Image 1 (tube, rainbow, N blue to C red):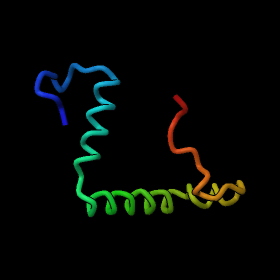
Image 2: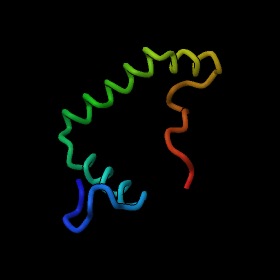
Image 3: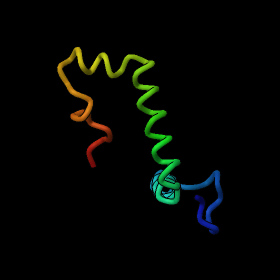
Image 4: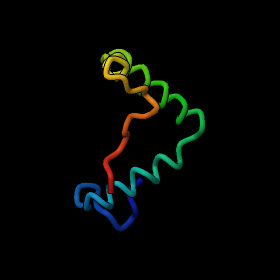
Amino acid sequence: MIKKHQDALRCTFEDAEGNNLLAGMCMSTRAKIEYFEEMIDLAWRTGAIKRMQQAGKPPATARTSSPR
């Protein structure tokens, strides 16, 4: 969701990140669950889950974002 005073093509990374977080918060619960299911399906089809299991890392311990 782009703030009214922002041009869609001219914003900082921080602006874009904030807009993305706001858009995610505005999603319905159903949409959030469907998105999560799509990400799990994608991880399964690309072999990411299998690679994590082979490395001895259960998916719950995977780092999902970079440290700040």
